[in-house]
Image (cartoon, rainbow, N blue to C red; front, side, top):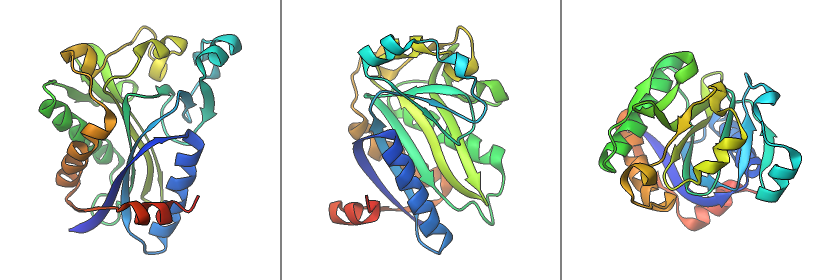
Amino acid sequence: MRELRHAFLGRLGYREAVRLQEELRDRLRAGGPEHLLLLEHEHVYTLGRSADRGDVRAGAGWLASRGVEVEESDRGGQVTYHGPGQLVGYPILDLDPDRRDVRRYVRDLQEVLVRTLAELGVAAEGRGKQAEIGVWVGDDKIASIGVHLSRWLTTHGFALNLSTDLSYFSGIVACGLEGVRMTSVERLTGRRLEPAAVAGLCANHFANVFERRLEPLGEMALVESRGL
């Protein structure tokens, strides 16, 4: 099994997280290890490669009053929200040579989230249609997926709503789906779960699905790896 270094980084700005992913991807390309970064973001709307800027419905005043930034991203997909109470996962993997299949990669990410949610008491499913990529509970979406691949090296990943303030989704057309309703573990179960409490569970399921051997990053190793 390949080694997968993982850590929960706490709350991190979006741009800083992108820089970190790119740095770790470059190291991976040069023969370095794979990583799974788990974290939560400050309030931000991110626009994927297929995004329509008009899907950010909130005006400048609304964004400023709520402290929401708007960032463009090279991930797939359209517009989504990241913020406190949401577990965000950024795998930096090399899918070569045995997993060179983008659809399989997305399905595997969905499976990680479905298994994680099952342990939290939520029955969920992944969907295969392009417009519905993500994880759903009935007609409600609980997790979004948007990835970037460069010569089979991955960045970006998934966002799972745990105790997310879902009102922030009202400022956008989430994932380009007019009228989609977002949900969270807290809304469905009444349990308020912090991302740090779920990160280890998610990492274990990730390792099982992707057949990796987990190697936790110590605090000093994490600081050194960030290089920021």
